[in-house]
Length: 358
Image (cartoon, rainbow, N blue to C red; front, top):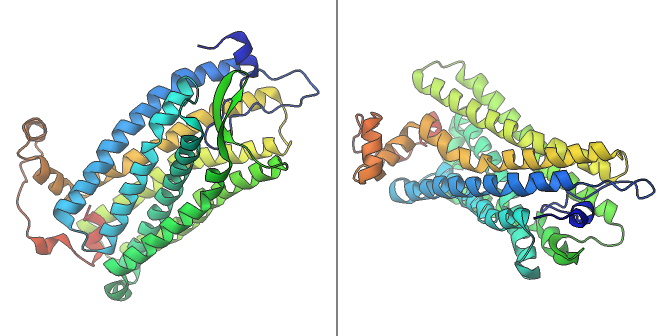
């Protein structure tokens, strides 16, 4: 797929434009043929896998929420919006998968739209995880306030604010992304104004602040206070709540922190702090691996809900009980032994039981 000239000159960019060939032009050019071959074999398969798992898992969450939960609490509203943002995110992956394997063939308009949709899904997904942390914090630490604050109305209003912020934060990607020709190859990347170094640095800084620093600070505070509160009241249900809290928090940090660290290091390269060719290549490899790892996060929320959320597991069993293949698998795994029909009154609670609602 790659000839020698292409390998030595062609610049591949992901949607953040972080796979550029950064090097000092006064020295020997830093060729990255190996990086591009690695990318063309590595990314398409994993992007496709994330797309399939994310599409199936988050579609299942939406189906369960509408069929059984009926959006009766703030938690339900946040879970629905998180699933929608994850779906928005994964819908862009088939385009990036083809781009990684070949070149951008979808035109300038889709270059802008797909880059923008990706970033909106990226920001909104992280913001809704942060809102769910605040929701759990209010439900457990401020139980009295939760009776009036944790309503569908407030959930809908805060969700709307999140979407507005995510869309506005992603506007530069919509403006600057464009399809262009480089060395007889069509690429899709951000074309910044004259002072492109500053724009690129500000872009990576925005991703670090909105995508990691603020959510991490909020989640750390909320979950530390939740755990402190739950430790005073020991019960099996509370223990399960703590386990789910740890699972959500650990998964978030494990999957997103490496990616944001590499983005920060790439910004140092943009500023000329890191100029070594081998360092640049290593950052390219690291970007591809950590970016794909971060992408898998959108597939994990449904898995966490199923294995650690009692009610979600029951709803899934209700949904697939009469389906031949899923029903047979559930029965073989012993998952249908505890099947029973719940009344609609058990679907909604304002107590700490919300931690196991899904």
